[in-house]
Image (cartoon, rainbow, N blue to C red):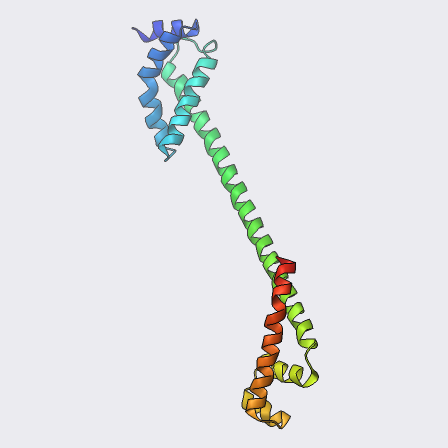
Length: 181
């Protein structure tokens, strides 16, 4: 069937003629869209949108004019709209992910700060000598030998005080984890 006749019938609402038009131009539209869009499923979606637009605008096209040009313009516009929507979605997703990443970092920092504050409160509950020894070990990074010399006690006594301090902290940490969890 001649293209002009097919277009006249499509303009009149003939779905069989539209199916012929679709079969005739589908590959051309698909290959053109494929130049700009890499995903074949998205290309198929664009092709479908093109032919939906052709059907919806069948009253406006003139069958005496160049249908290829008309089809090209519709395809180009739909590809542009698709690309714009895709890049807006991508930009939105990237922005959202950055926001989640920042909020996660802030949450992580708050959790770490809360944990440090809780451990500091636990250390403050230790007997004064044990607290002093523990802080010298963990905050000043002194060796057991250096602490023993400063406190005028044996290294074994220092080890024992640090072990007792760590046990007290470990025994009380589950309370914090349950409370914060």
